[in-house]
Length: 402
Image (cartoon, rainbow, N blue to C red; front, side, top):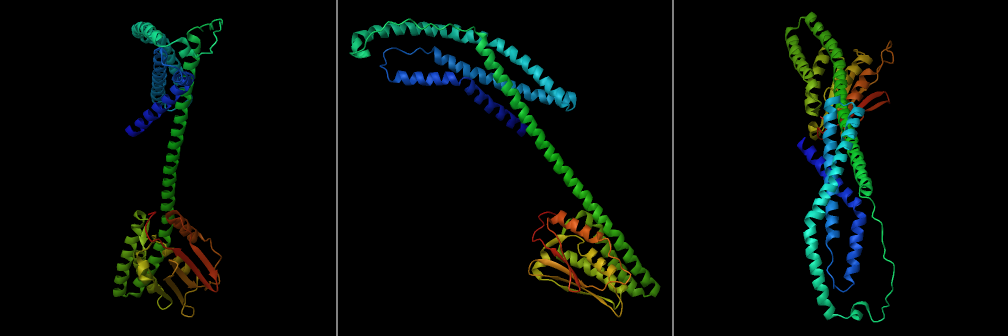
């Protein structure tokens, strides 16, 4: 917050300096041209300092005027947000009204301060300047001839004096002060719009992140019912077979699997080693359920075990293979899980469609694709050719988006 206020003040300071230079540009150019002309002439007479003093006063005045209006506008926008609860048009009307009143008050102070500085203070310096000028002139006349100053071929010409009528005091100043006021008001409004746009973008990103998290949680919630149903069926078969030792082992592995799934909402990405440890526990449960009918093969490169993938990525693919293929003594099913040189994890099984099997909704693959894109920014690859169904999952060498 404090850093933001400092930035606003720095912006106001910079804008005020630029406006002051712009308003006084004509006087700056006249001063520059006059200095160039005097530099090419004999330095006989002292140069009156009043013009330079007025230029300095004008630069400081319009800078202070612009900077004060910028601060007033900034504070008024903050006050308007509190009073009108970010009702934009009411806040803008408040800023316009108060800014014009403030500008009017400051404008009426200009002649008072100008007279005080330019007349009361500089009048004494002007008196001193006039005395110095007379003395310097008298001294110089004895040292130089008129031909030395003006040149031997200079011809005197009598011309009518250039008398320019002095404009009434307020008219040019009203234009300058009004220009500064409108420029500051538009500048403050522009920065407010830019800040509002930035806040909207940050709010949008926050809502987007929350939406993605909610979507992720929903996708994860759709996995659990399928898993629970299949696991309970396997446990029911063991209980009916009255194999106590195998039942206890099954319950132990089932407990490990449940624990991993319950922790999945707290994790985004896990290492391939963690995921395979869970998969091996789960495949044990399936091997008990489909004893002698379902087989698994694991072939992974050791370095890739430390690479990352979204949690519970392999589970829906195994469940999909079990659900849509014939698994029997005559047609056993083997699921191969292996890595490739392209840093992909492939889950492959031979296609043995059930006779009564429909095409299916494909919701499991859609959910997996959605989670993968959400957490890694990459797409899974699906191949359904040559009698084999393959899904390739890209692995990440670091959990950059976990």
